[in-house]
Image 1 (cartoon, rainbow, N blue to C red):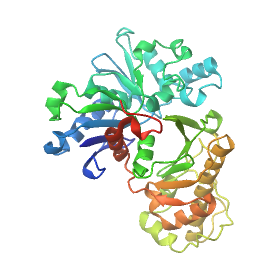
Image 2: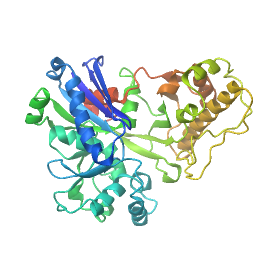
Image 3: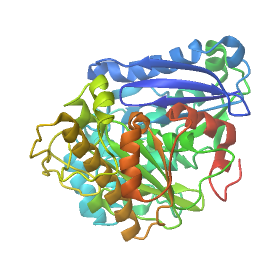
Image 4: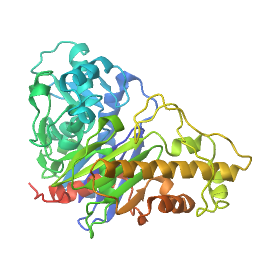
Length: 428
């Protein structure tokens, strides 16, 4: 049996799969509203609670597990993985001074991966988290820390380490990172899915886990969602993409060429001998929630002719600011003029969202990524057939719905297959 655990922004989920890929058990815990000092303890307690919710018979048969986490959520801890400061979450704005320093050091190079997020937070924590000795201080991503609680190893995968500044060509911390922070305080770097080691024996006894359970290096939540959406019988090919249609629009395109353009919110993750290029727009289901409830969305969608183009040209953001395919913190939402018909209003929003998705894939191709050939749709928006037909008309490629869109299922696949999920890789 194989266990995947997903840490998102609002909660965590666990999924156990059989060697065939069939789901054996699932569990979920929501975080609720937490004060800063409660966050790390909640992450830890949630991890242990999710595992112990799994039937003991499955826990005793676990061969491997992997954890995905929210990219650029960073925690400072000591060598025993005891937190030294509350984590800085992915959207924490306190490290702006450190981000500016990184941009000054590296210029445009590596900007998408390091200039705004994980490394900046590590620098902030290094300065403000108090003094316990630089050699004993560790700065870990969320998934790194959680895996460390089980394995006793301070290890990060290339996906989570991207926003810490990893050099994906060498798989090491580059000299410019070493010039900003003691790299001994950063985690050891390995490929996603690589075996870290067996579960720590005392921890395994405490949680009732097979003592021979292998802990694998994990990934980020968005890449776990990409892995979940994949078809095990038909591995993705360059040009295949997954669009996650949740509160925001997240695009992931498998490309033969690496594409990084921080000015457009675009970056590429290591994916074996290929690259997973993409970005995330602030537009998405959140703007629909501002104007419609579930019942109204279903009813009004039935009134829309998806083959007809709405004359309204909306850019449906939930608030000011966009990340991708335009990087413009001041960009305002455009939801005017407002028609009298609620159905036409919804039509214009859905069309606007589909346009943003099409613009995103077009921008990736313009910058050199492999041209789009198919899209798998994941998330709540994938369940709306009217929206899907509007998207298909604008994207002009085959669309399908993901059979599994839970990121924890993707992490369970990573636990099962290890590095063999990535083209050109062999398990280790």
